[in-house]
Length: 85
Image (cartoon, rainbow, N blue to C red; front, side):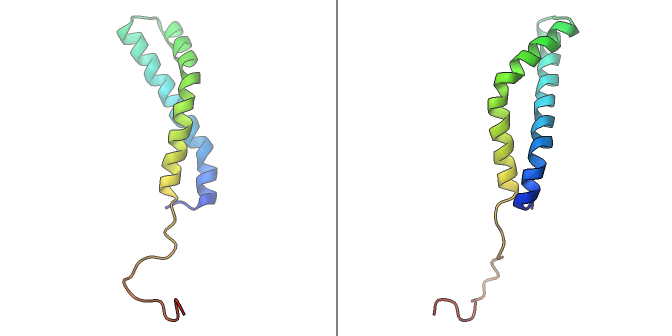
């Protein structure tokens, strides 16, 4: 589990890594499927990655929020003495 401070620190490297992987995968697909040379495939994938950032950034935030959700007090099945009085 990540603390909220750790999640904030991990956001930028995680988002940049996801964006770089997206660019690399799109460049490889363009190179293989559409027979573009490497230079043009990287150029087009860089252009495509800018609008794709609208999906990568919230997905990264959701992933880190899921990893840092609160589990401060574990459920042990017992009662807390004096609670509710």
